[in-house]
Image (cartoon, helix red, strand yellow):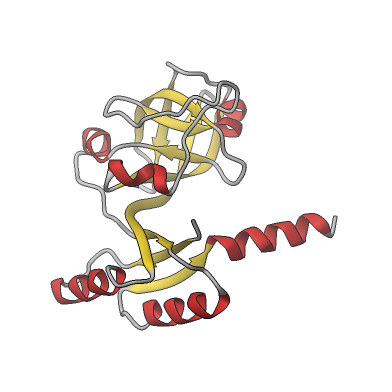
Length: 193
């Protein structure tokens, strides 16, 4: 399915949140998922790498947007409340495997230990995936959902422009990115090499 991603402000007032959800529930959107997506440092030993933390609000919808699986066995992973999943290249750079502990560090410099439950296939960026319950265990607070992923029923250029423009009319929407557009830009860059 075509997928769009919107960045939204965290402190939505109730009326804005209701209006945004009403728009999303109209005909163009097939599915949606709110996510806390932030950049943090991930370390093990002397190695530290930057990664995106991905915490989906609704675990039942994750597979409609992100396919978490092992590259080698092709077996799908399911997020659980005791472990994180990390992307394969990051696991290699940190020299960690399933069952190892890694450390998450955000701006304030505190290190938060988490156990790796699986190494997921991914070819773009480094990610740490965790459930909202594990996030609360680790950080002592609920996630702040700041990104929304949308699957659109039809992503022709006209629909993409219209939906993007309408979404940007909401004060809480800071940016709209269509994954198909990003994929095309990456392919163009690779073709030019």
